[in-house]
Image (cartoon, rainbow, N blue to C red; front, side, top):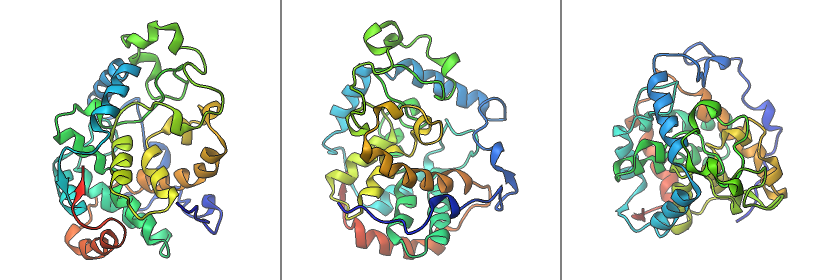
Length: 286
Protein backbone atom coordinates (compact mmCIF):
# COMPACT_ATOMS: atom_id res chain seq x y z
CA UNK A 1 0.00 0.00 0.00
CA UNK A 2 1.24 3.44 -0.95
CA UNK A 3 1.60 6.27 1.54
CA UNK A 4 -0.24 9.38 0.35
CA UNK A 5 1.08 12.91 0.68
CA UNK A 6 -1.60 15.02 2.32
CA UNK A 7 -0.33 18.05 0.42
CA UNK A 8 -0.85 20.57 3.21
CA UNK A 9 -0.62 21.10 6.94
CA UNK A 10 -3.49 19.05 8.44
CA UNK A 11 -3.92 21.60 11.23
CA UNK A 12 -4.91 24.26 8.69
CA UNK A 13 -7.65 22.30 6.94
CA UNK A 14 -10.61 22.23 9.34
CA UNK A 15 -10.35 24.59 12.26
CA UNK A 16 -13.72 26.11 13.07
CA UNK A 17 -14.13 27.24 16.67
CA UNK A 18 -17.82 26.44 16.34
CA UNK A 19 -19.52 23.60 14.50
CA UNK A 20 -21.59 25.72 12.14
CA UNK A 21 -24.14 22.97 11.61
CA UNK A 22 -25.62 23.47 15.04
CA UNK A 23 -23.67 26.26 16.71
CA UNK A 24 -22.09 23.88 19.20
CA UNK A 25 -18.75 24.85 20.72
CA UNK A 26 -15.89 22.40 20.29
CA UNK A 27 -15.47 22.10 24.04
CA UNK A 28 -19.08 20.92 24.34
CA UNK A 29 -18.33 17.71 22.41
CA UNK A 30 -17.32 14.57 24.30
CA UNK A 31 -18.61 15.79 27.63
CA UNK A 32 -18.30 12.75 29.88
CA UNK A 33 -19.25 14.58 33.08
CA UNK A 34 -22.85 15.57 32.51
CA UNK A 35 -25.61 15.58 29.93
CA UNK A 36 -28.90 13.86 29.08
CA UNK A 37 -27.20 10.71 27.77
CA UNK A 38 -24.59 10.38 30.49
CA UNK A 39 -26.20 7.51 32.45
CA UNK A 40 -26.31 5.37 29.31
CA UNK A 41 -22.77 6.37 28.37
CA UNK A 42 -21.34 5.64 31.82
CA UNK A 43 -22.97 2.22 32.02
CA UNK A 44 -21.59 1.29 28.58
CA UNK A 45 -18.05 2.25 29.59
CA UNK A 46 -18.39 0.53 32.96
CA UNK A 47 -19.21 -2.75 31.24
CA UNK A 48 -16.48 -2.20 28.66
CA UNK A 49 -13.79 -1.44 31.20
CA UNK A 50 -14.87 -4.37 33.36
CA UNK A 51 -14.90 -6.98 30.59
CA UNK A 52 -12.28 -5.96 28.03
CA UNK A 53 -9.37 -8.16 29.11
CA UNK A 54 -6.41 -9.72 27.32
CA UNK A 55 -8.23 -13.06 27.24
CA UNK A 56 -11.43 -11.51 25.89
CA UNK A 57 -9.65 -9.54 23.15
CA UNK A 58 -7.69 -12.58 21.96
CA UNK A 59 -10.91 -14.59 21.83
CA UNK A 60 -12.71 -11.98 19.71
CA UNK A 61 -9.82 -11.53 17.32
CA UNK A 62 -9.86 -15.26 16.71
CA UNK A 63 -13.65 -15.43 16.42
CA UNK A 64 -13.93 -12.69 13.81
CA UNK A 65 -10.53 -13.03 12.18
CA UNK A 66 -11.63 -14.81 9.01
CA UNK A 67 -14.70 -12.60 8.34
CA UNK A 68 -16.91 -15.58 7.57
CA UNK A 69 -20.14 -14.59 9.33
CA UNK A 70 -22.09 -13.29 6.34
CA UNK A 71 -21.87 -11.79 2.87
CA UNK A 72 -23.09 -8.25 2.10
CA UNK A 73 -22.33 -5.25 -0.05
CA UNK A 74 -21.18 -1.98 1.50
CA UNK A 75 -24.53 -0.31 0.87
CA UNK A 76 -26.42 -3.23 2.40
CA UNK A 77 -24.23 -2.91 5.46
CA UNK A 78 -24.78 0.84 5.62
CA UNK A 79 -28.54 0.29 5.60
CA UNK A 80 -28.18 -1.98 8.64
CA UNK A 81 -26.68 0.95 10.56
CA UNK A 82 -30.13 2.58 10.38
CA UNK A 83 -30.90 0.44 13.44
CA UNK A 84 -27.71 1.09 15.42
CA UNK A 85 -27.50 3.95 17.93
CA UNK A 86 -24.11 4.21 19.66
CA UNK A 87 -24.72 3.96 23.42
CA UNK A 88 -21.23 5.25 24.25
CA UNK A 89 -21.64 8.58 22.43
CA UNK A 90 -22.58 11.57 24.62
CA UNK A 91 -23.17 13.80 21.58
CA UNK A 92 -25.79 12.06 19.43
CA UNK A 93 -28.84 9.85 19.78
CA UNK A 94 -29.59 9.01 16.15
CA UNK A 95 -28.67 6.04 13.91
CA UNK A 96 -25.07 5.58 12.84
CA UNK A 97 -25.96 5.61 9.14
CA UNK A 98 -26.57 9.37 9.36
CA UNK A 99 -23.28 9.90 11.16
CA UNK A 100 -21.53 8.02 8.34
CA UNK A 101 -22.86 10.46 5.76
CA UNK A 102 -22.16 13.49 7.98
CA UNK A 103 -18.53 12.46 8.38
CA UNK A 104 -18.09 11.64 4.71
CA UNK A 105 -19.63 14.90 3.53
CA UNK A 106 -17.47 16.94 5.92
CA UNK A 107 -14.37 15.30 4.48
CA UNK A 108 -15.64 15.76 0.93
CA UNK A 109 -16.01 19.52 1.42
CA UNK A 110 -12.55 19.94 2.93
CA UNK A 111 -10.75 17.45 0.65
CA UNK A 112 -12.61 17.51 -2.68
CA UNK A 113 -9.68 15.93 -4.53
CA UNK A 114 -9.37 12.86 -2.27
CA UNK A 115 -12.36 10.67 -3.07
CA UNK A 116 -10.83 7.71 -1.18
CA UNK A 117 -10.87 9.86 1.97
CA UNK A 118 -14.60 10.60 1.44
CA UNK A 119 -15.19 6.85 1.38
CA UNK A 120 -13.28 6.41 4.65
CA UNK A 121 -15.83 8.72 6.26
CA UNK A 122 -18.64 6.50 5.04
CA UNK A 123 -16.93 3.25 6.05
CA UNK A 124 -15.40 4.10 9.39
CA UNK A 125 -18.18 2.88 11.71
CA UNK A 126 -19.52 -0.02 9.64
CA UNK A 127 -17.94 -2.43 12.08
CA UNK A 128 -20.77 -1.50 14.45
CA UNK A 129 -22.90 -4.12 12.72
CA UNK A 130 -21.32 -6.33 15.39
CA UNK A 131 -24.13 -5.01 17.60
CA UNK A 132 -26.56 -6.75 15.24
CA UNK A 133 -24.56 -9.98 15.23
CA UNK A 134 -25.00 -10.66 18.92
CA UNK A 135 -22.26 -8.56 20.51
CA UNK A 136 -23.14 -6.22 23.40
CA UNK A 137 -22.44 -2.57 22.76
CA UNK A 138 -19.55 -2.51 25.22
CA UNK A 139 -17.75 -4.89 22.83
CA UNK A 140 -18.54 -2.77 19.78
CA UNK A 141 -18.52 0.98 20.44
CA UNK A 142 -16.62 3.57 22.44
CA UNK A 143 -13.01 4.69 22.79
CA UNK A 144 -10.43 1.95 22.41
CA UNK A 145 -7.35 1.37 24.57
CA UNK A 146 -4.53 -1.21 24.78
CA UNK A 147 -5.09 -4.21 27.02
CA UNK A 148 -2.16 -5.95 28.67
CA UNK A 149 -0.48 -2.82 30.00
CA UNK A 150 -1.08 0.09 32.35
CA UNK A 151 -4.25 2.11 31.70
CA UNK A 152 -3.07 5.63 30.91
CA UNK A 153 -4.58 8.79 32.38
CA UNK A 154 -6.49 9.99 29.30
CA UNK A 155 -8.62 6.83 28.97
CA UNK A 156 -12.16 8.08 29.42
CA UNK A 157 -13.66 7.43 32.88
CA UNK A 158 -10.50 5.58 33.89
CA UNK A 159 -10.79 6.28 37.62
CA UNK A 160 -14.36 5.07 38.02
CA UNK A 161 -14.84 2.08 35.72
CA UNK A 162 -11.89 -0.35 35.86
CA UNK A 163 -12.12 -1.53 39.48
CA UNK A 164 -13.71 -4.91 38.60
CA UNK A 165 -11.56 -5.70 35.58
CA UNK A 166 -9.62 -8.89 36.47
CA UNK A 167 -6.53 -7.75 34.52
CA UNK A 168 -6.12 -4.94 37.03
CA UNK A 169 -5.12 -7.59 39.59
CA UNK A 170 -2.43 -9.13 37.35
CA UNK A 171 0.99 -7.46 37.85
CA UNK A 172 2.07 -8.63 34.39
CA UNK A 173 -0.52 -6.32 32.83
CA UNK A 174 -0.07 -3.25 35.00
CA UNK A 175 3.37 -1.88 34.23
CA UNK A 176 3.90 0.88 31.67
CA UNK A 177 4.83 -1.57 28.93
CA UNK A 178 3.04 -4.64 30.29
CA UNK A 179 3.32 -7.47 27.76
CA UNK A 180 4.81 -5.22 25.08
CA UNK A 181 8.24 -3.95 24.12
CA UNK A 182 9.18 -0.25 23.81
CA UNK A 183 8.21 1.18 20.42
CA UNK A 184 6.82 -2.18 19.30
CA UNK A 185 4.29 -0.50 17.00
CA UNK A 186 0.53 -0.31 17.40
CA UNK A 187 0.02 -3.14 14.93
CA UNK A 188 1.57 -5.40 17.59
CA UNK A 189 -0.62 -4.12 20.42
CA UNK A 190 -3.87 -5.80 21.52
CA UNK A 191 -6.50 -3.07 21.42
CA UNK A 192 -9.80 -3.41 23.26
CA UNK A 193 -12.15 -5.24 20.92
CA UNK A 194 -14.69 -3.26 18.91
CA UNK A 195 -15.82 -1.96 15.55
CA UNK A 196 -12.46 -0.43 14.60
CA UNK A 197 -10.50 -3.67 14.56
CA UNK A 198 -13.37 -5.63 13.05
CA UNK A 199 -13.78 -3.23 10.11
CA UNK A 200 -10.02 -3.22 9.57
CA UNK A 201 -10.15 -7.02 9.30
CA UNK A 202 -13.00 -6.78 6.79
CA UNK A 203 -11.03 -4.32 4.67
CA UNK A 204 -7.96 -6.57 4.71
CA UNK A 205 -9.96 -9.74 4.03
CA UNK A 206 -11.67 -8.18 1.01
CA UNK A 207 -8.59 -6.38 -0.36
CA UNK A 208 -10.03 -2.86 -0.40
CA UNK A 209 -8.15 -0.81 -3.01
CA UNK A 210 -7.47 2.02 -0.58
CA UNK A 211 -4.18 3.61 0.56
CA UNK A 212 -2.48 2.66 3.80
CA UNK A 213 -3.78 5.82 5.46
CA UNK A 214 -7.37 4.62 5.00
CA UNK A 215 -6.70 1.30 6.74
CA UNK A 216 -4.93 3.10 9.56
CA UNK A 217 -7.68 5.68 10.13
CA UNK A 218 -10.31 2.95 10.29
CA UNK A 219 -8.26 0.82 12.68
CA UNK A 220 -7.37 3.54 15.18
CA UNK A 221 -10.00 6.27 14.85
CA UNK A 222 -11.47 5.42 18.27
CA UNK A 223 -8.09 5.37 19.99
CA UNK A 224 -8.68 8.78 21.61
CA UNK A 225 -6.14 8.25 24.42
CA UNK A 226 -3.49 8.22 21.69
CA UNK A 227 -4.53 10.58 18.91
CA UNK A 228 -6.12 13.15 21.22
CA UNK A 229 -4.82 12.37 24.70
CA UNK A 230 -1.18 11.96 23.67
CA UNK A 231 -0.74 8.76 25.69
CA UNK A 232 0.80 5.43 24.66
CA UNK A 233 3.48 7.09 22.55
CA UNK A 234 6.01 4.73 24.16
CA UNK A 235 4.39 1.86 22.23
CA UNK A 236 4.52 3.64 18.86
CA UNK A 237 7.07 3.14 16.12
CA UNK A 238 8.02 5.55 13.33
CA UNK A 239 5.21 4.29 11.13
CA UNK A 240 2.61 5.09 13.77
CA UNK A 241 3.94 8.61 14.13
CA UNK A 242 3.83 9.14 10.36
CA UNK A 243 0.18 8.11 10.35
CA UNK A 244 -0.83 10.15 13.39
CA UNK A 245 -1.53 13.40 11.42
CA UNK A 246 -3.95 11.49 9.21
CA UNK A 247 -5.81 10.03 12.18
CA UNK A 248 -6.00 13.49 13.73
CA UNK A 249 -7.30 14.94 10.47
CA UNK A 250 -9.98 12.29 10.20
CA UNK A 251 -11.01 12.84 13.82
CA UNK A 252 -12.04 16.44 13.11
CA UNK A 253 -14.79 15.23 10.82
CA UNK A 254 -15.74 12.18 12.85
CA UNK A 255 -16.36 14.40 15.87
CA UNK A 256 -17.31 17.90 14.76
CA UNK A 257 -19.76 17.06 11.95
CA UNK A 258 -22.21 15.50 14.41
CA UNK A 259 -25.48 17.40 14.22
CA UNK A 260 -29.21 16.86 14.63
CA UNK A 261 -29.53 18.36 11.12
CA UNK A 262 -29.56 14.98 9.38
CA UNK A 263 -28.54 14.46 5.74
CA UNK A 264 -30.79 12.86 3.12
CA UNK A 265 -29.13 9.55 2.18
CA UNK A 266 -31.13 9.29 -1.05
CA UNK A 267 -29.47 12.47 -2.33
CA UNK A 268 -25.98 11.13 -1.58
CA UNK A 269 -26.15 7.42 -2.40
CA UNK A 270 -25.31 7.76 -6.11
CA UNK A 271 -22.01 9.50 -5.40
CA UNK A 272 -20.96 7.12 -2.64
CA UNK A 273 -22.01 4.08 -4.66
CA UNK A 274 -19.54 5.24 -7.31
CA UNK A 275 -16.77 5.24 -4.68
CA UNK A 276 -17.77 1.80 -3.47
CA UNK A 277 -17.66 0.54 -7.06
CA UNK A 278 -14.18 2.00 -7.42
CA UNK A 279 -12.56 0.85 -4.18
CA UNK A 280 -14.56 -2.04 -2.66
CA UNK A 281 -17.17 -3.36 -5.12
CA UNK A 282 -19.43 -6.35 -5.00
CA UNK A 283 -20.48 -8.71 -2.23
CA UNK A 284 -17.97 -8.81 0.61
CA UNK A 285 -17.05 -11.23 3.38
CA UNK A 286 -18.03 -9.96 6.85
